[in-house]
Length: 497
Length: 137
Image (tube, rainbow over the protein chains, first blue to last red):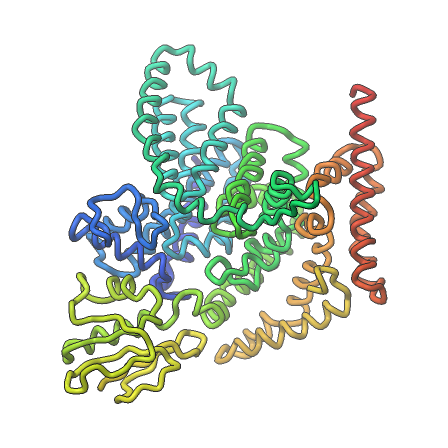
């Protein structure tokens, strides 16, 4: 790699790191419930070797009954060993994964295209991508899973070109992604199949070397280690609760409205919704944690370049284009099987082909056109600043309830004041209160903390206690503090008797 | 934007004004020069006008009114070389017709018109595919 190329990579990675690390612990929001659950279970593992339900080093974490996958939680436990039970320890694995994804994405495009400028442009677009920033600035398992997949794909290519040992390492990361995020259990096998088809000649040539047959045997043994856990009944709980089939309404009197035909139609519609232009480039996922909602998953000005790039990959069927086309077509399959579409988290892997194809279109139109380069640089800078403004100013105010706004402050203050009281009552309106208390409060949860239904009737007026009530409750006591979310809506009030 | 995604110029103008009002209201405490720089009719208008235009070409909008099983034929109509330029020209102009005219049409009529256009494209794609197989190319 030339010095100038290395310097530009360094600058892109620094930009990616800066954007992801800046105020990540509490901006735009504090931890939401899944992050708190991850942090709580990770700390429990660190301190006791068991999860919140008392199971020793589980492969699947029961949590709320959806059985979370283990890799991200154990990774957070490692970070907590250094950083303690903090919001940063929960988010940092996702942040670092996001930054490294940008790095390995550059290497992946470079190794396949041998075009340094295209690789750098792809990396830059991923570094500033609203979609990637959204999920790599919070404790989302999908971010870590995406990193494993990009790294594994890069190592796979390296393996077929240089040394099969890289394919072994690639397999390890593919397997890890299967235990990081559920969607990868559908995506990764199909991606591996696509890789085998696209690089079939190179793979067959590898077996002419006897040493590689030994490596392949080792790879098969490795699979025996990772695969059985995939078929645990706990691994299917989440999938069955989200199946799109529950939304299909058959009409027994109408022949063509039978279950098979309607299910297939629903599946195809779900699939197409994840490739919707409005969702990808204009309005994004309207779920409050999945996008800023005023901008698409990607910048809208990239759309013409994406369409140009898409035309180019259809026209020029080389290995690079085939791989990213496979990525594009395979990713929505998993989400299409679920009941909510489009879904920015379940289709996060789309960011890879989307970014590459947009970069390809941009590169093909800009090369040796200085005027357009200046114009695009201006448009890029303007809408990037606009995105940062929306993310840091609009987004916190408009989506605080989606991130359980006000919970951290309410729990923190209650715990701080609890030392002076015999008892602390917390309303059951504090959804998932046990997990929030377990994470933001002392571990284990003190016995004098009790959850009660609201409105709360006084039990013993001589006892000195605190009561964390819902905002709507007019309680007969001394009002100490009120807690609002970042949008200014009241959430809880702390009372003493 | 617009009723069931059928955006008209009047919807666009209304949306631009609403969006600016919402954004400027949210920006309490932000320096006024920054508010004006980021929330102005040109930037917001470019964004929403593009959104309005591409809504008509959005695959998700198409499959709302046309069976998804016809989508491959619609795509093939654009891939095959025969008549591609005319088709592309028509499809790029079609949203402008809906945006700048046809306001007086009822929603139902617009849906039938939109559906009809893509059904014809699917038919054209099917015919091209049929010719391709018959000619053995």
